[in-house]
Image (cartoon, rainbow, N blue to C red):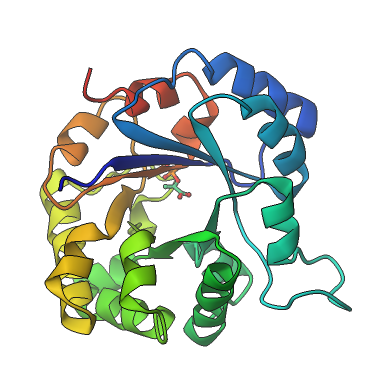
Length: 250
Ligand code: PEP
């Protein structure tokens, strides 16, 4: 069975609650495409108004982060149960900005992945190499290490239901997109890695996105590749272009 494409916006630290509602309204008529799962991953404070604003539409809401404990003395953190109760379905885990600025390592991210599943949230697990790593030829080794470390203890059934986002760090927010062939090479290697850890059935089911300066102009070529099942979109998710990406096949 063909995998359904999944196009997710990562709003990062943008949009106040009232701006968030306005963006959802702007995008509402533009993001209708039954062939695609559409997700808005939004800042924590925007979750409640955005869930309200997308009610009755084809859009699901994701969080950009969550903590690994159930509740308690973790000032400033958001528990998975809070996300679920608010209507969140997806959670981004291991975005390179969190790995870099907040020093989240693979052991911690593995805990987050397991915790997300415990609560019925679908992880969008990010991985990606630096420019130095690409230039020194270790991209595939690095990505495999990230996937294997972050997915320790994840069952085949859980793996089949999750999303992995391949996001080369040098392409995020830089306007430098990986070529469709570069992106396909890594997404294919990720699928092979999943087949190795689990089996080919799981590898055929898991959805693998490309992220890194995807926009209305380059999305068609990227999304035409056999192992690229969608996109994680930063900058272009904050404007009407996002609708063009969602409708890449029209
Ligand atoms: C991202 O942050 O996940 C991302 C892909 O950003 P951009 O599209 O802006 O490169």
